[in-house]
Length: 492
Image 1: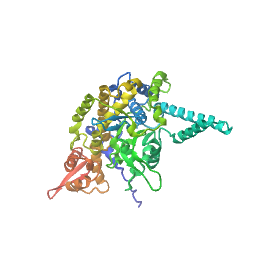
Image 2 (image 1 turned 180 degrees about the vertical axis):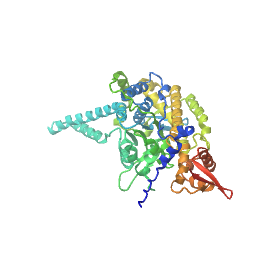
Image 3 (image 1 turned 30 degrees about the vertical axis):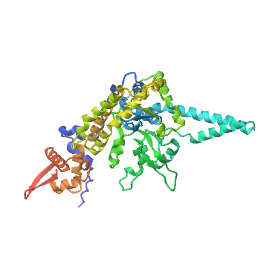
Image 4 (image 1 turned 180 degrees about the horizontal axis):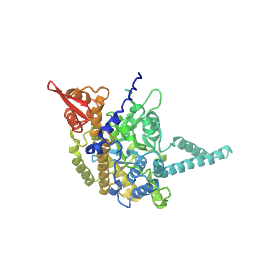
């Protein structure tokens, strides 16, 4: 007699999707294909703002979502502006204006092209500086070789050599945490990490995404958000001691955000990032449609960026940064907004999950950073010499942008199964995967309260698990039986 083939072990996610595929009441939450959030950040920006105009143009050229393009451009600009300006809290404490941004779009959607457009003015300035130094050195070296150089020219040559040795690339695309530390000694604590590959995260954070217990050194990234102090001195290599200021823009493939959220491990890493995943246009693009670039727009943006040329070559100290202030009316708007979301941070509130509470708690910092950058890009140099104060309209824009991104993050965490119904159901089903033996409510609560997503829930974990069990019963996912007045649950 032939043995019956052993059935292949069922994948838990396939099981979840199969169970929910015919239940329209929760299909919108549990459909694994719903991984996007549709937003319109540009509606909050004046039509004549150069970043809005450029974002719309780049979005048309690349067929990328305009809000994703805008966020990538804002983050890129902030990565250099943070080396020259800082914004002040109400008490006068400085806050860096560098943004941490992670955006998802599929491979082949034009992410690299988008980033290059926003980076180009800074690359052009870097090349100008490099060419100026090397051409000057070539002329002076020629005179020195011929024995006709003066002492002043020899001194000038030495100065040019020192400038060349100190000259560093403005953007980092792929580095380890240790490699970043080495750069800080040359840049006076500043870093700008920009990439269209998820590998930036994997390399920068190293083993922080592994499941083993090895702890990574993420001090540079964690402290770079708000100018924290680090001391990375090592016996085996040169370290850095001082304040660190940074910006990160990762415009990468799918699952970058999910990886970041799942891997923060209570460090506060993910809550520093602005996150966005908009629907892609792959499969809908018309490659015969020509989009003419308006060079007036790109030239205007490049002209705004030239204000940063001096700090590209000569890194200043954090304490030497130019100060941008927010008027009392601006802080009133920020504080009023904070009051509107305060109730959502309470246990069981909309933003009470660990992945969201930290982000919502830092929203005032994000508002200040975004408003400062919007103001910098929009202002003329002469206007800033008169006043380094942010107009209220930029505060309004920043508040609306942050509120929209918070709502989008909440929806994203739910649809990706990090929090919400899908995550809760998956956690319960996983308990029955290897052994479908009936389990008591007490046993389920004891087991699931120690794992995601329940362990991050700030309210009554036991009550949330009971609610989840009741919902799964109503959806015919679980069945309930009794023995000696004790209730038992089994997977159907």
